[in-house]
Image (cartoon, rainbow, N blue to C red; front, top):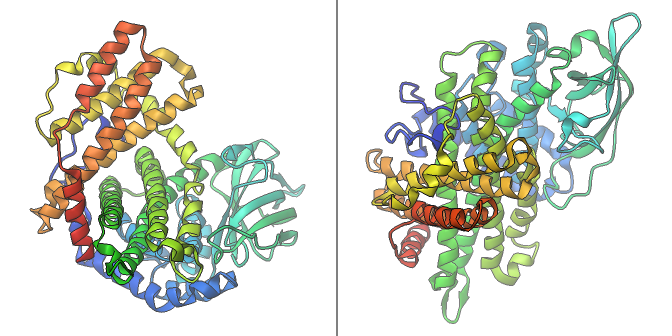
Length: 571
């Protein structure tokens, strides 16, 4: 993709307008992007979709599918050419992640390999480690897994108790402990295992499957993604070469968190991809199913559901590719792992937002698809049964949505403290915002941002360093920030649609639906927060007036908008 356009720095969307005209959108995919999308879709259609039912009974079938994906280059997108990869941009690897959302179980196996399984080695490995493993990971000759979670350490990953001790002769690490919920554990050849050196220095290690003392639990019986392998990994005095330390001693936290940033935005993309497939099934069924003498797609209640599904998917794509486009621009010309990781970390807030929105959009669409199918949706004979079961895990993967929500305002305030963002005086600006006029869409977005900044500033003033303990407040602030990003991404995509040769009227409808719904949600949460944060009745009145002015919007015919969107979806 072109990297000459303006790059908006991470998290600055809350204090700066989007550079309309330079925001990357799906309409700006290059021919290379479209080619890799076709490759992924054809692979899924021909080889994975026919195996979905069989996979649910035998996760080992992932192995030949992953090897076939390797032959097609679908495991090599992020790996540099020097190590047998394709070295493509992040938009390309995100396109693959979005396509894989079609088949959730295989998507988990694929992501565990190419993302959290391979990227720690790519970014932190020594030259010798990379030469030994990366070409084989790129081709699918060997399969990777990532072993972080423990029975007593889930969201608090650094509380893990797995230990690593240097052997008396200094030639080996000896690892002991138990990891759980490890994707690909049933067939992976190479594990990135996190352990504390001498019970103190949290570090990462490369462990091969055949290492003595390494064993595995049974396949977990899961609600969904049954076609993926999920097992416990047991390490009983596992001895590995001293050269298998990944990164530096005590660098495990840095490795885990940086890789999760990539995992989060890719998971968000996969959620949107899965939602698109679930919606397509609902559309096909609604056209075919007849009640009262006509297809149920003719009824307003069904059409509204389809419109709401489509709107979430369209806005989700706008968010994903705006973010990943900025990441690619940040990475342009960079060499060295430290510089690359710094660029990825810059967009950690947006990555958490994408994870939340993508996973919750998928759950919404899967749930509504079941409703469109009615009683048949509750039957395992129809595809939405699997969509519904498989969708639920995504709100837990890569840090629960609650953890990610708690991170968003916390990270914003840390950047504000470093003077990267300006929140000083934002609370007063909100109090006096009742005089602001919302005259157009851009003014509405600006008002939403003023509301978000003001409430974050007010919460900071009220709670200071203890704000993180006020989780209900932080969660509400996070939802407001998320809706600001959703709304602006939608507006930016619509503003570019005509110039990019897209369907401008359709984009305008999607954007209007997204922005007005986001403004309504922001107003609702902001009114609640104003009641909690206000310093007395007079302050509450000023804040309430400022909130309502910030979220004021012109009246639109939402029913008519949904009807037009439904017409396009069904066409």
